Amino acid sequence: MLKSIGRQLGPSFALTVIVAVLVGLIYPFVVWGIGQAAFKSKADGSFIKSNGVTIGAVNIGQAFLDKDGNPLPQYFQPRPSATSPYPYNAASSAASNLGPSDPRLVGFIPGFNTVGLKGQISKTNPFATKTDPYCVPMTPQGTPVIDPSPGQKYEKTSSGQYVCDPDTVPERALAYRQLNHLAANVPIPVDAVTDSTSGLDPGISVANADLQAARVAGARHLPLSKVMSLIKQHTIGAYWGFLGQAYVNVLELNLALGKLKA
Image (cartoon, rainbow, N blue to C red; front, side, top):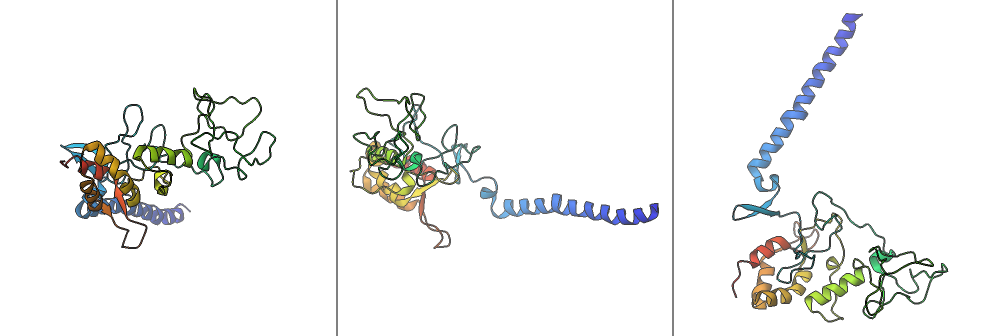
């Protein structure tokens, strides 16, 4: 009986050890070796260094903000990020995952998703402001109100207008136009006002970069032609020439900006 069990367990144990060594040791080391030999930079994380100091990674975006969280005008700005507790937190990849009718994404659209206090679709947005007809109001605690109820308290400005949720697409479009000194009829690239799926995308569309060029050139006292030329130099084409679209790596572009002279 014991000999029979031993004959069955012996090969099983030996096979387990062999597979463990092959899959758990040999295979990982082979893959690691190939990566180090053929794709060392990518295998090590594609880090970017300046003066010997690691300042970022090619495949992970980062914000260019001042100490108060405002966009720095002398830098190209990446697309919005939904990671927490701060934008482009690589340890917290996340997206908003809001649907196309969610007021936190598209705002309150009269006759579509504007629900009055009686639970009926309203033909007007009672929270509209002079600049944002789709305004989603905020509570004094800074939370967007998407389900208004009797007695609800709202945050208002000194002029009596509602404070709108800054993360809706309409509000982001307003902020983008204001930052880049654009007219109200200028179309805004979708990547300028929406989060990526990961919240970590390092690139922006060429159209997005082009619309920011004049602002960056002015802030750096550079000819616009130089900045536009730099955008072209840092434009990455679609994968294999047809997958996706061309884009510009924001970190690499901003680093190249620092080397330009007026």
